[in-house]
Image 1 (cartoon, helix red, strand yellow):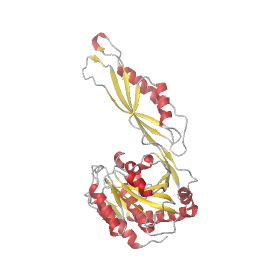
Image 2 (tube, rainbow, N blue to C red):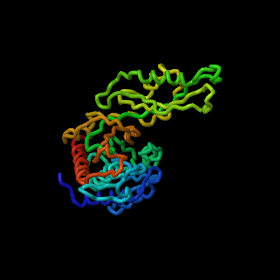
Image 3 (tube, rainbow, N blue to C red):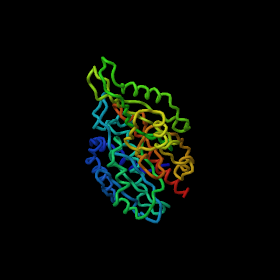
Image 4 (cartoon, rainbow, N blue to C red):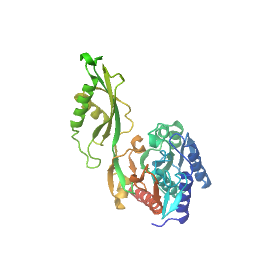
Length: 366
């Protein structure tokens, strides 16, 4: 599929400007203005909610269903080891080097280019909504989650139902149809304080270690062909007691649990509670595992294009959506958060082309 050269150049120019504009999570105001201005210059009317920018297609019809184009404009801090300025878009050997170029600058500018391509079309059987959102890198609450629950945003839809989404993340333009969820538990083993020299008390560390050993042996039987096993890992352990001669009355540890799409968080929590002595407190149930079925029109369209599908071990804003969402975008997840992060210009070109083709073919599925 051939697309206008200007569309590609505009996307690259936008990415250059985004790289040059620091946009750490919770500090995205400047980059959100960059995106807002880009859309305005192309006669696209957009709205802002904090640092989230969103727009609908010109001929938005509330009687039609809608497809959401979403990606994030926040970045992590630069990794150590950059050989270039992370805030200067360095073009070399057909690639653009710079912080956020791959995650998720390229997917975002490619989605924006596709949105601009379809903006004035009035023949699609669905609406298209663009959302460039904040705080994805920290799973913050002032990003896409805030937007999707905002009264003004909901009023903008006018009753239109979001029936699917494209979530722009670096997947090499393969379809991440499933995504493992993230459940973090704070565990507290309770013992009884005593003097270490007299062997008094009940050592909470011993209870914690006993539970940690059990965690290593617990089998979550539901194995997913897409995302593998549900796995619990102890990542932190500590006691409040700092005295060497006191048996600690409590010992705390943290469980990082990657949950496949075959389990609910409640099921995982129930299994752990039935096996452990420690008290377990979930930090959040927000980042749930997700699955968009192979029968969804967007996925069927991707399959007709010969796109591969897989299950993703990492979480994204897809986890915060209560409708089917496909994670897909140019770039490679292995480059994310690395020094000298980069994207090939050719990947952006192909990303725009594939997004446009995916929507064209999805329209035929409606």
